[in-house]
Length: 333
Image (cartoon, rainbow, N blue to C red; front, side, top):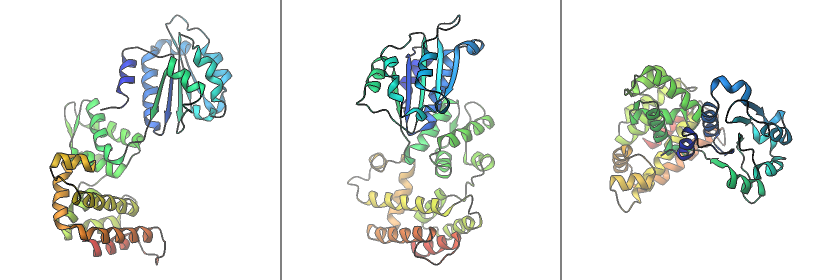
């Protein structure tokens, strides 16, 4: 479920707060909610008169308050959006007096990225009483495929879970970049259609055959020849397949196997919940666990750590990324 759905629902129903303080570690969600407010509060034909965009580095709290105290022109509300509000972190508490008595016809949106208000101070308490505080958080990697599915569903499309996993694995937790790719893919796929691994390969440039997901699958299934083939491909295309990303992927995979071996119940749903993965992956983890018994995993994790150091040029003779990966597979496959 979208953690910010209640706030978005209120906005879509025009149940506005006089102050929205959007803060925290994930800029994408801050931008997403502020965009939603811009679209919802003021009709486009009234924005010239009733919408003001300010930037933290070019304004002050006094100026923000002055703008907020204006009255809308022939409209119910005026909207004041302060982008880069985190630039005002040293003086932000000066907003307290306004937050205690906000202008009822003004909707103030503060975009406070990568910082948070001190909940013990008066400003935070005033906004909690009279407005809305949204604290955004980074998504964990294992939540990315589900987030992709939700985003695609909101655009009235579907996505094959394997395609979502490959996209998450290769693009990573940059939600802005992921969102851009999804928008592009949804232009290609018609409503109610399904985004497949073929679409990912053709339009994003991520091979459905040569990726970290398939490398792990090849190792887990004992298809050593395919694992070396993928590693060779990675060595030829280091920019598209950076070694540190592959090492990190393999490290997470063997940590999952270590955890799987220790589970009291191997029931697929219980195992998926315990490992924090989609049930889609459990069959492959179960298969890999048969190939890699518990006693083999700790030495493999040491080998992966050694490869990580080599990739970073620590205590190792400089070699190409492809060679480091080949040497790692020699010991793991």
